[in-house]
Length: 328
Image (cartoon, rainbow, N blue to C red; front, side, top):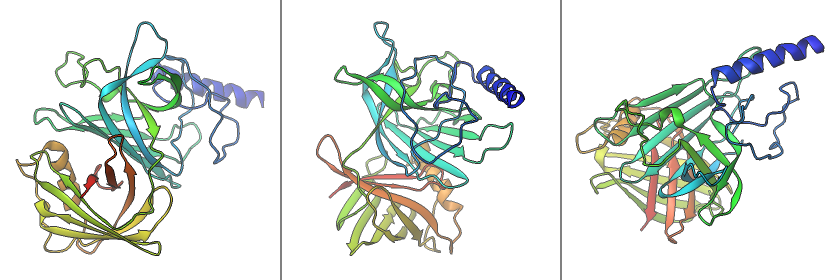
């Protein structure tokens, strides 16, 4: 047992050296402890503390409000920024991977698509991939591989001045402009993002019509939802691609899973100068779906802080495709 513990300690030390100041998250207990599917006991982690284990996200997923964090010299905890703000959709975990998408909207829009492997091999850390895309035409896509980025209980001071432990993502590697000057994408941002569960979110949809506009203000997606005794039908019209998709699924309290079809001959998923870089990346992903194939999506609705009903549909396998539509 002593030999095994020494081996694990040596491996943990190697992970800390490779990860710099501990970009990964997780409870820092012994890695020899048996894993369970229950949420670990939450402890606030001091900023800069080395994190040895790769943390996992909430297994059932969910939708979260997202706030960028900045450093305040007067506090040890990082402080929420009021603007810009965004939305994160964490997809349910399966035996192979767990995916997530983060969308921030401000003077420029940015999206991060994350993929976390769940298979643990002896002597190896599960793979992590993060791809950043912005709507700037001159910005190349940011890419990060092999770093644990999740902080399950990060000390954060919220907009009301209260400190608490929050789920957070460390995106420092992909948080800079591509100008070589170490300039953050958003002024004052330290590279971390705090995630707060949206309590009003539910996958038990009701009948309704929803619309999302593209960067030019034109209709990008128009969605109709129906719930027939728990059987969901979600019709998704994509005028920009002359396409009509249909999702079918069973309503659930959190995220409802949909099987989406309709990628037929009429669909024309082409990139355009009328779309921004994020939207064009979605078109490129949609174009790869076979005409007779189906894809998985997850849907939920919630009421925003401005009392606006919102519909969210995420496609974990389609390069971050995220529909966020207002109720009409």
